[in-house]
Image (cartoon, rainbow, N blue to C red; front, top):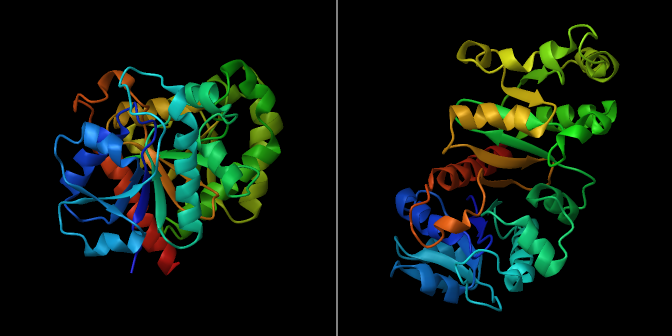
Length: 327
């Protein structure tokens, strides 16, 4: 039996709660999950959609279809729906910690996280992490983790994540690249069920450096790493010019594209599937997915936000949980 997925509420002033009700309705009981949130927040936003407070995750299986299971977590303030509300920052962080504790104690099969706002968390609780990915690595006791973005048509992994573009070259190292590729390779095997993952790696510079004409990162960092990993049996191509990696025919030749920085990876994914793309964190001892968008404060409470990404995030979390259990 696959245990339910723990879904965090994210920033209560964002669209997470709205999307949760929409996703729950559209999934129609096909995936077991529960929301960790303050019940009073749901009452203020639910438009009379039914939910039931549970005491443990297994109660999800005994609830009447169409009723959202909610694990109550007290917040100090009712959401104002006017954007930033730092008073709720600490409770937002505690919900993430609670979800991690539940998956580690085998009360949930995976974590799915609704969006947070890093500035709100920093202002209200001195949150020192660039985002969910780094915070979850900390909670799991890992030095680092890897962010994968994916849809039905493409998987991408940025080697450097939430850093300014002018810092990418100095942060890029052989060690970081090796760790990223190995974590991606292992996750494709263990969680996605791909026995011999095909990995395509981009260059950093235009035309993948063109043999040093446009930069030396390819010759000094990327090429030595790829040659080393090929000798270890990995199926790797590259470094590839990033501008030729993402057309339809090219995407048939690999299972994942590893890119050197954030936008190099995320722009093609969002251009191909803006609403359906999701985020999953690799290298953790548990499964974590999330929708690939932000809190969208301006849409909170309007029901105008598109739930497709959250729906796909829950579907992928459930799929990965089943594969991991078999592997």
